[in-house]
Length: 136
Image (tube, rainbow, N blue to C red):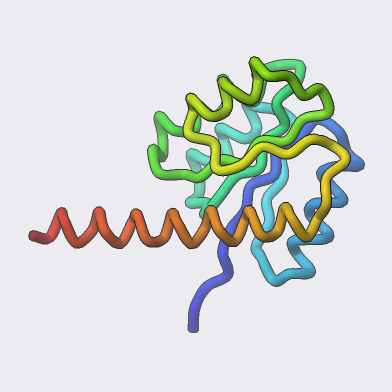
């Protein structure tokens, strides 16, 4: 039996965390949530995630720094950013940090789901390729 894919949702807004948790849990994903960057880093240290959805603006560690620190632990973890304060600068920085996608709040949940599915599929393929290369 295949295990459920795991998503980490990080946002300091309870409403957004609950919305995403309820939606993706209903799509049969295993969900973990964090309301700040340090909590997210602790979760990443404890468990594997197939993708992470990060808010860009948070009080302790912003989403861009959090993505960097998460990639230090798992360089292949796909990151999807979301923000209520979009800017060209933040979009460019997200791309520089190899973001899988960038969503502006309020976002369409079906579009977010497609981005999550694509990020997980891409990550799974990359990990399989890396395993094959390591075995060769």
